[in-house]
Length: 140
Picture 1 (spheres, rainbow, N blue to C red):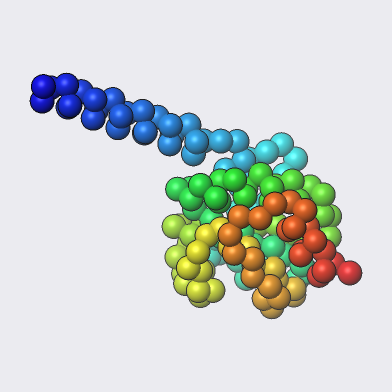
Picture 2: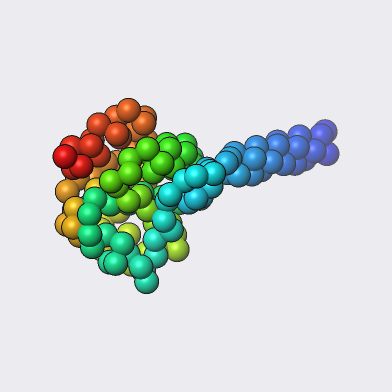
């Protein structure tokens, strides 16, 4: 009887891991994952330079965050459609200093910068139409 429970537990754990692995490798879950995307990978070395000029939308995300993985292809699509806006992604696990500087507590968080100054913060998963409407306010 104990062997059966052990076997069932192992099977369930394996299934869960395989399911998570396949979900976390969904196309578009990393910056620049889709063909034609113009999403810049942002890190400590290039952050200030990238947000310095123009309208920049920075997506704070992590590989283990399911809503982030769903947000990624939406941000990618917007990067190809909104030519006046620069889109970038900050992996919060690899860039803790940037995340701390901006007080990122929930992900996904998108911050809209205009000439280096934060204009608006969008927390949580949002659809393409909503994000486009919010971002468009700053391109006029």
